[in-house]
Length: 322
Image (cartoon, rainbow, N blue to C red; front, side, top):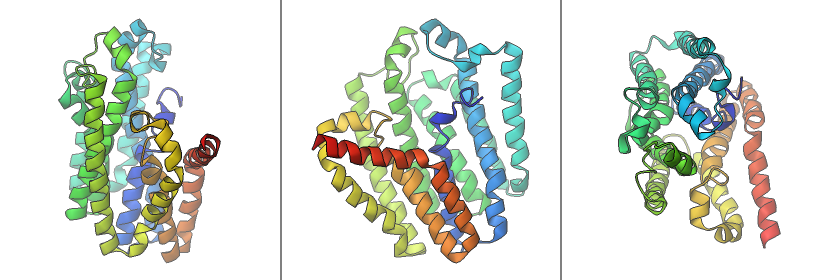
């Protein structure tokens, strides 16, 4: 089942970013009650269901292409009826889990747009994933931006920080989908799938990713500056710690080369900061306000164990290569 929804590709990344926004908004609104913790459960089920639907729908739409290219696609192991069934279950589970949040009108709008963008990205006759620029924008909206805006809508929080984080989410989404397309580029060429990366040379795509990364870094620093102003300078602790950590790893990064680092999921710069360091630290800050929230902190550690292992691996690799 986990392979069917491609769990390993998103469980500790995309959803982690949405939870980070939730933690931040709790701190910004000085609202750390037990009910807020309990709301994480249906919200988490919704995000899992939304991501599962999007990834399964994409695999469903690509099942014949992937079979021709010899690319693994778990959907091909199921009968057509079972494929439709699992998609329907994921859709209904997500809509049901979202019941506690239907009172927020903007959340419903972004909910609708989230599912719509997934459909437009993956399915014919739209199949925007094969439409170049519109494809990578649609992927970014579906997988990162719109779900983030759902969280802001639940808090009815629309301000400059919302805009900055939406911009940051767009940039993160664009960079990550381009990494994915670069990895799949040879197979996409083989099956005549015209993605953004296929329509350009690898060098050109990397150049675009490098520009996106710089803009992303600026957007992240701008957002965190607002966070520090709204909450406390304590919010910047992960950035300071991360800079120190990356300076320690710098000799290893130099040997790998920036292109190797940026264009792969193995190293994925800033990923551990976004998906582990930020959420963990903000859950600790919330725990200081309400000790019950340290339960969430414990979940954060268990949930993100792969990020912990990855950072430890980087330390070991740095020692081996120096």
